[in-house]
Structure formats: C-alpha cells, structure tokens
Image: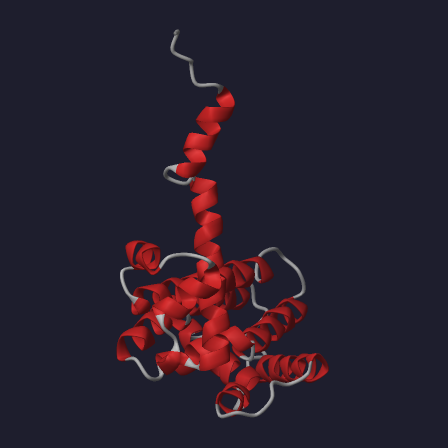
Amino acid sequence: MARRTPTARSARTTSRRGRPRSGEREERRQRVIDAAFDELLEHGFEHVTMLGIASRAGASKETLYSWFGSRDGLFTAMIEQNADSSAERVAAALAGDADPEVTLIGYATGLLTLLTDRRSVALNRAAMTSPDLAKILLASGRHRVGPIVEQYLARLGAAGWLRIDDPSEAFTLLYGLVVRDTQIRVLLGEPPPSRSAVAARAETGVRNFMALTKP
C-alpha cells in the first residue's frame, strides 16, 4: 500500500500537538500572567503558589517553571509588563506640542490612576515583602518612567514655559504635589479615589506645580 503524504490539515494538527507557535505561546503566557494577578488579588502574595496559578490558567506547573524559572521570576514578568504599559502611556501622554498644563494634567491623571489600580497596588504590596522584587519594581517603574517626565520638563524649561533648573528635582516636586499621600493610603487599605477625585487631585497638583515653577 502506498504511503500517504501528510496533508496541510495533518501538518497543522502536528503543529498544534507539538511545540506551540509563537502567537499561541504568547497567548498562553498572557493567560498565566492574568491568572497570577487573579491569584494575587484573591489570596495575597504570601499565599500565591505556582500550582494555584497553573490550575487557574489551565497550564501545567512544569510549564510555568520552564517559562519563568520560579515564582519570583513570574512576578518579575508581571512587574515588567505593568512597567512596559506604564512607560508607553507616559511617553504617549507627553508627546507632541499640546498645551503644557493640559499635557501635565493628562499625565498626572494617568499616574494617579495607575498608582491606585488594583494590580499596581497588589504588586507594590508584594514588593514590600521581597527585597528582590522591590529592586525590580523600582528599576522598572520610578527609575524608568521618571527620566521620560524629566526630559519633558527639561523641554518646557528650555522653551521658557517653566523655570526648570534641575529636571530631576522638578519631577520630584511634581510627583509629590500630584500623588501626595494617595498611594500610601490605598496601600494601607483605604478604597481608591473615584475618577472625579483623581481628576481633581491631578488638576490641583499640576496647577500648584506650574505656579511654583512659573518663569
């Protein structure tokens, strides 16, 4: 009997049964990260296990260890994904030549929204229990996004919009005026501010900042 040549359909089936394609792998990886966030929000960092995440994601524990190496490796991926999204949003918010006050209010609103988001709060609480994760959170968050804002403030200073002698100090001032004690209060258990409260705090913080840096 002649040997049958594999059809395109059988080739696709083989692909599905073998190593997943890159797109499929990314989808499965994202399901794992989403499951890890759900476990974190539901149980808290100390009680999250790779087995629980694998079960929720419909994956094997061996797959998780193969992809991330350890539970901290998985949480590192979660922090980096959150940081990537934040950096992209900040860069987009500060791009262009729109009115500086409007631009900064948009940035400040996004900042407060991010800092009081359930996922960000949960990651910050996790990082407070792990020095290694704390370093990663700082490197991926404050030390990555801060320079983007500093560069924007430097441009405003060079254009004469504001008096910016030291962009780093200016960013610290802006951050403090906008965030105040909002993040720490949410970390300690208070409910996050409403959208209207976030918008009001962002606007007040930016206007105070611009009044203090008026040329």
